[in-house]
Amino acid sequence: MTTRKMLYGLSALVAVVGVAFVLVVGKAILDAPEESPRVSAYADGRYEEVEPFRYCPVQEPLCDYEGTTATMPVREGHPLQLSLPGAISENPWGFASVYGDPDSGDVVESDEYFAPGTRNTLTVPPVNEDGLVLIGVEVRLPSGVIDVDTDQEEIVSHAIWSIATTTAL
Image 1 (cartoon, rainbow, N blue to C red):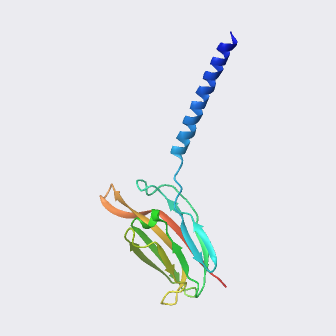
Image 2: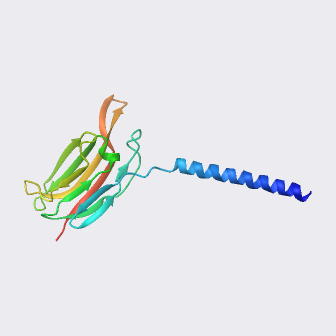
Image 3: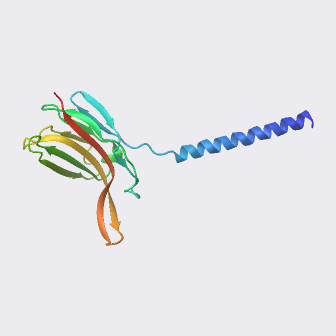
């Protein structure tokens, strides 16, 4: 085999490997999971980017996704402040706040729903008007599901950002 044929063969091999590498990297980039949106939370001097507790595609709202619940300190005069990215606030979304009485153990959940683009921030008082203490909050993106056995439609949350609160001293 001549040197020229070896160079042609080696060049062809390098070209094939290069094209294969570009195709593999391109496919990996296209197939990379989208980064899930984060809720910005601020309370009592602490800031945190809250990752989802649950984040499923709208078409598969009951997927197996287990995230974590963030924890933020709150106290009288220092409310929990939330800022939502457009990926949440430009869709219909819900908000749940849970307040409780540490002495009696009573717990009350309050739910609110917002139309797309109407609100992207919330300030949550650490103590509600009934004197109950904030235990936690959730930001939720709803999705409709139809039970095939009963043909009943149900609303479930395909994405949830969960924040537990602690009383700061």
